[in-house]
Every structure is written in structure tokens, then in C-alpha cells.
Image (cartoon, rainbow over all chains, first blue to last red; front, top):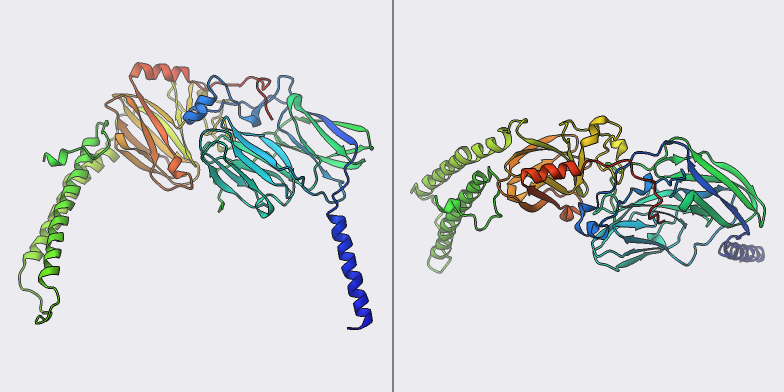
Length: 263
Length: 259
């Protein structure tokens, strides 16, 4: 081989090694925080309680409780839980998925958490804490489908590699084919800067590198809102209040007529 | 026809029309049994009598006897009697002779993968408006809670409550794929087709709780698509209907919030 060719190949190989090393190093974490609340400025959607007596086990573990469909929940101060907030653009660098899996638990015939975020490629640990048969059926558009049952209490299954969600997708719905009211939503994002609004409609995204970003929001019942431009310096906190005044078109699709091949 | 009345091998029959269905099942099975024994015995006889052995060659000429022809004609006539004398009357009774609507309780059923959703119209006799856009985990049929007719409606999942000794009409439909509504003890089975509303009727003679099953493969949890029919005295049913009226709006979610 000619000397020039050898030199070129050596340089190209070294370059690839360096690029690979840089890519697997993990993106930067910061010291800024983006937080706020999610409010509802419209009358709450009318709702019916979930009919837990559809299944004798679910009826027994929820005896005496009124279980609301989570997407319809509104706190008495007019704030919304279960809104998924994430940095839609402005993040640079590649982020490895964390070693800990996203845990989805089936307890009391409900998925917990109901809404969650994960980094592309993060493993998912699904467990059944109920002494009854549950089925876990994902309905992604860009990621692999899984559809399996966990008939016994304490069964677990971990999805990794090509079995987990590796492509960005907001949101992936997971449902139980045995209990039709059970649903969970997972936001698959390329980085770890996301949060889900909880008590009081509060959300908080921590360890954000300082910079200018666009924030996105999704809610199962109320849909999305226009992206918000937000700037935060290292070590500082930026706040934004999201306010829904009406439903938008991007609310969760109804599951009527869903067809997929499953696994 | 004592043998035609035997029920030991069938589920209990607690419906008013079930005896004609059971009679048809029994007669058909006894007839099949007779044919099976008869033809089977003849088959074994032929295997032995005409087995290949030295000194015997097969004779391809048709036999002149007419016994088999008369036997086949006899079978065809018996089958015609079964069809015209038993099946058609039973079918006509179950499929066409619906009870008067003012005497019957009418319930709507919307099937889905993998649950049975029942919708009662309540005291006003008018079903509240439904819309697929309103379907959510607590509202599986998409009942419009703003419609005044919804105020007394009752929606249940997998639990069909009915009064005893009253004709029941169930209007069947599906949200997604073909299912089949089957209550063995009431001798009811009807395919449920999305986009259609197909009525069935029955009347229970006894109280109790029994299974509803899906009889048309509808997906990977078809085997788990079970419901219960609760047959109660009329006064208990009326009390249940009154107590179960759709409750809304739900209180704010401060209680027991969990991410």
C-alpha cells in the first residue's frame, strides 16, 4: 500500500476513535433549574369514576375508593397533574441513557407512574404488584411494540437494547388489554431534561446546562401548548407557568380501532 | 323423546327459550350417534370382510343392492325434518319473535378488546348521547355527560344486571373488532359487529350470577373477555339501577394523588 494511503487510513481510524469516545462520554449536566406550574383556565372536563368492579380483584383492592381517570384530574386550586414538560430544542451534546431503568408498576389495577419520561435507549422494568393478570401493550409510532402478559404477582420483565424505546417519541401510550381503563404514557427524549407535573401542578427540571431553550408541554386531556422560549443561566432558576384555556388537537388519541401486530 | 330431553351434559338452562335449543342439540347428537355407530360398524365389517388376502381379488363391479341408496335417502329426510321441524322454529323464535319493547328492559352493549360495556337508559327510557371522542378510562362508551338524558343513565363494565322473569333486549355493538356475546345458561350467542346494532332477547327464569363469554376470537386476550350476568328479583334490580346512576362531576383530585 502507498505510504500516503496508509497515513490517510491511520488518521481516519484515529478520527473515528476520537469521535466515538466523545459520543459515548455523555452530554453535559448543568446547575440550572427550570420550574413552574401547569394551570387549567377552563372548566374541568366532566368525568366518571372508573368502574373497578369490572374485575373482582380490582374491585377488592379499590374497595371504598373513588378512582378518577388520571387524565381528567384537576386539583382544587385549578392546577393540572400529569403534564409532561420537556426541553424540545436547544440542548446540544449526546446523552447516554441512565443505568437505572424506568420502572412501570401495575398496582391497584393502575399503572404507576401514569406519565413518565425516559432517555432514548433507557431500559424499562415492568412489574406486576397485583395478584391478578395484567397485560402490557405499548402503542408507539416510531418505536418497537411490546405486548405481553404478567399473570402472577411480582413478575417482572426488563426491556433493553432493541426491545426498549430508542427513538424520540412524545408520547408512547401503554395500555392493559385486560383492564381497559389502565393506561400510561411515556415521553422518550434524547436527553434527561424533562419533568411531569405533580401535586399542585408543579414541575421541576433540574441540572440543566445554562442556555436558551424551547420548552414543550403535553397533557393527555388538554393536548399541547405553543413552545415556550426560555433562557436560564448556570446556577439560576427560570420559571414558567403553563395555562390551558381549552383543549388542543394534540390530546391523546382515542384507542378505537388501533391495529398493530404486537410481538 | 326422553333422550332428547336429557340435560346432564349441557350447562343449566335458565332461559324461557332454552328448551328448544337444547332439544335440537340433543336430537342432532343422538342422530349423529346412531349414524356413527351404524356407519362405523359397517366400516369395520368391510375392513374385515374384504381384507386383502391370498386367493381373493378385488371386484370392481358395482353392487346391485339398493340398501345404501335407501339409507342415504332416509338420512336426508331425517335431516330435512331436523331443519324444518326443529331448527327453523327455534331460530324463528329466538331471532324474530322479539318481546314487546314496552314489556322488556332494553340494554345497550358495546364490546371492546377485551371488555363488555353496558349502558342502561334509566327511568326516562332515553339513552344519553354518546360520542367516540368522549371515550376515556372512566367513560368507556363516550357518554355525553352534558346531555340531560344522561342524568339517569347507568354504565357498567363486565357486569350485566337484569331482573328475573322479564324479557331483556340487548342491542349489541362493538368499538373495534368482531366479538360474540355468549351467555351459556341463557342460551344466547350472537356475533357483535362494529358499525352494526344487533338485537338479541332472552328471559331468565331463575336468579343467580353466571358467566358472559366471548365466542369469537377477537385478539390475544379473547380468553379473558369474561363478564358476569347478575339476575335479581325485580325490586332489587330497581334499587340497584337507582343507586348506580352516573356520578359526576368528580371531586378535585387532591385526594390520593400519586404520580
